[in-house]
Length: 442
Image (cartoon, rainbow, N blue to C red):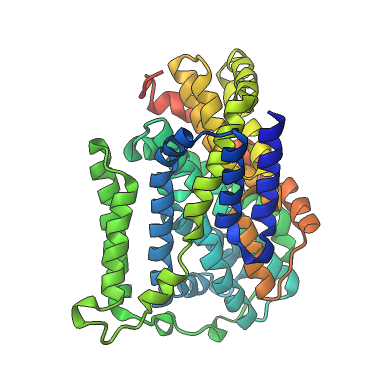
């Protein structure tokens, strides 16, 4: 246990530090290799871990490719400019509209895509509107915050969702039936806490005339015109293929290839292409493939060394206190662990622990979904809680808006708990209504 914990801590430090530009992938693989050498993990575990993470990893890469192509085509800038115009020059109307836009992008393009794509667009737009530094901070924090707090509605909205859903055999349709209504409560709670925290910093008016026309943001008309129909087809495909057990990565991958072909004008040999597919592929998050394999192998070894048993004992006690305590307690426990050790390792630890608890069907379902919510929202407590937050802070620093860890935690610890608790209570109330009988084996 001591060796496994030491290797995990060393790996996490390497992932956060990334010495000599190793990247998160090679850093995590270094930890995995050490775990194999020491004997904390076995070579046979590699197959087990890969079976758990491959679908989530491939889906994530495909979603980022899709989102980057749409971003290069001007789709998200066009949407943001329309939202700014819908605000009608009123800053206190624009704020919730931007939050809702962030929730929409998160649902379909994952939390990482929302934070990394929407934030630069919002910063550029606000700078053009000559917003104060306090107002810009309010919008920036809102875009980063909503990317995680509303990342529960669909399986594809967060890597956490994909890993957990696959581990417990939850289909896309079943997951959405439970979590879409819960996510709406999370969105309302997010709007309320963000308004409470930043409402006074919002400008009363802004000059709509200073904004460029949305159509001028479009750089690839072909991809732009195809975006909405393709997204509708993609969403329908998820639901249609779910009963047949088709991996979400297969559906997402097909759409990514289709968009690449369209953006790259493959049928013309590349002539007339407005988006560089090579650049999109070059900047795709390939490191996440190595990270998933390496970090999850380290965590799997840590779980086998006894940490999972500790978590199981706590969850067993929570389960005995009734559905409400089991739901809220599991979510809060997952959130705290995720904020300390990062939500991706925490996700696997949560799944392993819940899987070992002997529970009635309804209690089991509540704890599974509660662990997802905790691992989705809990990272907002600290900057190291999720890779999306770390990348988001890096993007902000590159734009001249540096947010220190102390400042981030002060805000995160203030606005995250009420949203987390409200979302867990919504799950507790909604799940027994929509799924009165166990939907998967106990």
